[in-house]
Amino acid sequence: MTVGIVGLGIMGSAYAGNLIAAGVPVAGCDPDAGARDRLTARGGVAHDAPGDWLTGCDLVIVSVASPAVLADVAAQLGRILRPGQIAMDTGTFALADKMAARDAVQAQGAILLDAPVSGTGAQAAKGDLVIMASGPADAIAQIRHLLDPLCHTVIAAGDFGAGSKLKYVANHAVALHNCAAAEVLHYADALGLDRDTVYRMLSKGAGQSRMLDLRMPLMMSGDYVPATAHMAMFEKDLSIIGADIAAQGITAPMFAAAAAMYDRAWSLIPKDHDTAAVFEVYRHADDST
Image 1 (tube, rainbow, N blue to C red):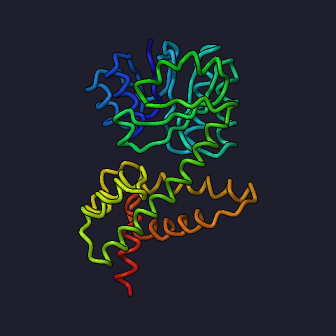
Image 2 (cartoon, rainbow, N blue to C red):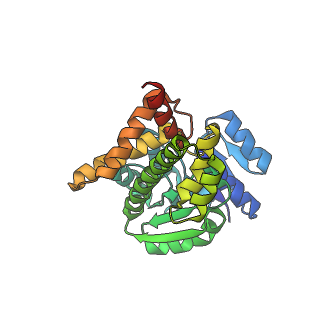
């Protein structure tokens, strides 16, 4: 069984590493030579672009950063993949972009699953993800065993697109919990409390959250590079979620408040920094008063 990976960034390279460690042969492609070199060093086979090499893969994982790249890759896969061959897109995109990619991939009879993941790059490196797979149930069942090295949980979400809807809900929660952790740490600083003591208490108490556990240590240290999740990527995700909330016609004041915090952060913080850097909005506000 061979897995092909299109896109060897933070997430794609983590998928490759975990599959190779589990004994699954991996071939992958990325325009970045450094990403290709890292795959080769791990024992994978590297290419600079999608090509006929993908036809020998039992699963093709797409891990790209923008809807424009997704559209281009999907068009290529539609021409390259065999009828019945299965690909899955793990990114967070608007449903319209996902549907267009599905139609392009399936033009010649291949299958595309919508399978976004919940978790940071650091979690991906440890296989500590949730995969929300949506699309034909028989296709998900066919490749299910290949997902085990990547995650601790696979959720069969239903029809194509349901996985993305779950991801919107997941990242809605992540945005709120990131901002909550930042505000709590800011309050603790104002009280003159020892940060390590605060973190130990919160991580063991009723106020614990997964994002607090992952991101508060970064807020405490100010060590935002390398990022577990880039500010630029989260900007894209929150824009998608905000547009979908508006389309649903629902009230979401907590999301609006968190999005406003990130709007301020994006004007202050380099976009290659970790999303934990939203904490710097508080420090900057105090410095400005």
